[in-house]
Image 1 (cartoon, rainbow, N blue to C red):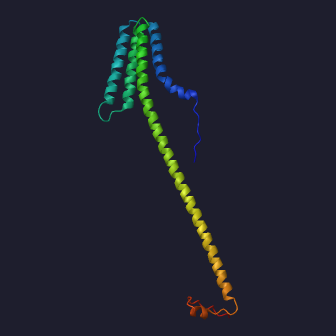
Image 2: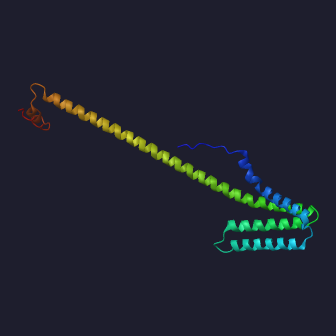
Image 3: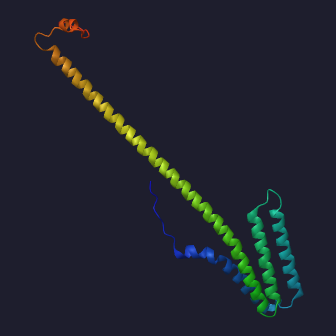
Length: 200
């Protein structure tokens, strides 16, 4: 019933922790490549990114509104809006100071949101492991009790069979003794024994 313990590779553990920084860094690098290819001070490109970022933010607001709001869709839309805004500013600006400042801010926000998700995920995983451990212990206890009960029933059956066999042998041996008189036992106050069947 014991499950094997599988050790995760360090890359599998570190990859989720590095994902927010990798995402914001990728947006910054792509935006600077776009800047070098003609997006610097381009009003049309800046307007496009503004419209896309605003649309993504509006989609996130609509997705999170009401009781039936989907937090996953809302979070994805807001993340897309932030990424588009970062890309637009980093592509439009001529220096690196503002894009780097926005990159640091976006990375900090991404890690803040991811930390909250990681904490919730870890709490759910710990609760699941605790419930699974309790279920395993309960099943193991039930299995032990049933095993003990089965062994006890087997021992009782064996003892009953041995007692019945010994009793039958004793009755047979007593009836075969010379001078055995069932009437004398009855007169002595013992229960009357059935007469042996006549032999043909």
